[in-house]
Length: 273
Length: 304
Image (tube, rainbow over all chains, first blue to last red; front, side, top):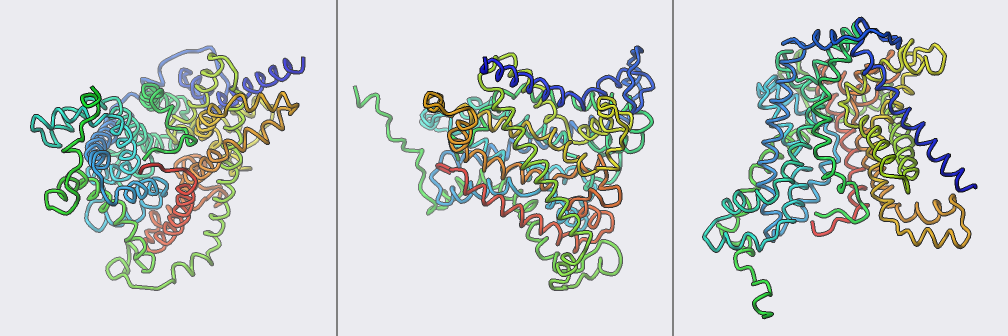
């Protein structure tokens, strides 16, 4: 009887937790389809997609989303290329300082990137890189590298060396071996790293906020903040619609890699370097 | 037969060690781009901030042309600056409240409650909690902005009228960050709990240990490494949190929720006090480095 009561109490607690977590989403979802919605949570029976059509203009949403895709996409592609190359010798060769290098990378993943942006900003200012999207992408790539190299090496360790040997016998160098044998075999791993970096940069607000100068270059993360601070009070329905359209890609991509990421939360089995 | 099946000693997989030129190029070429990017855009700026923190560098005015070495002046100013001390205390409260107590405890509780539940329940709970985590930080701020508004969802449910963002800004940002970050701890603890041997817990139950004692004396000690590693990681993430607080309260009202990253932003990017801003950044980096080192000590890194 007490066992049953305990189970019931646990179930009830989970239900309350779920409701509490849903709470903050509630008005965003409802108000996005309410015409003239304000901050006041007073749902009406009116349903319209006006808020979505209102924000689906070139300056408000389309250009910022394109910017987001360009910034996050090029960062993801560049990170995967550079991390993939770097992971090869780390995975395949006996290097004297490999352990030091890997530990330094792991250490770097813990550093607050927010703090690094002050000197990066000053540096960009001094070298006339302030406002440059490519320069920012290079910084974002560098900041994504430590974790990505770590993940890439783990995925690459999973590809047996014996599979490469046939290619070596045929006279292939490491470049061919990497692109023709290892790369295709670890394609799921590459996708996970790419999506991981993409989603991370999709939500990155601080870096573009301080490194880019004009609104036309800004990704949706910054545009939605500007929209929020200007119209958040008066046109909450539109902010809600904006939020949903901007969040959707991140959610879809997360769902796509969810099952691959599940294993990476375990510390107990020790981190593989 | 054994000869045939035994893996042939890989002739080419052990390249000549770094002695020959070709040997160096073999690892330097593929590692090169990563090393260059990390040096130029991470190590370089960090080292440069160490230097700039000891100068009066600004982006406007005379010091922008000729910055001078000012010794520890920035740090003397920093530790006597009531606004910095305020921000430091608030950051401490924010980290303890939202990460160490909030996310960590709630994540552990949810993971514990989920044990032995059906697939359906688990995926619903996981889905809801993870949804809050996947949402970009500015959107999370927009969610909480309406949730805490005077006529918002929370007040409607509680039947009160309260301007949370003005009367209790720290509580508001702490709750928002607990909401956003709990998923990470929950996933860490779900993974850790799944590795706790069932028979150990059952044996204790047979010996008459109640659920509380089993948790305290068996489960928690077994997952203590995960707990410590998780605490370090969420502390590091929370320490540098900017977007959520900035979008939700802007550090206000006044400086009531201005944590150190927001204060650093104000000094460096609003007043262009790069020298002073770098000193603040350096303090954050040093604290981050300390926690990162503790984290490295805690996890077992095999074959790195």
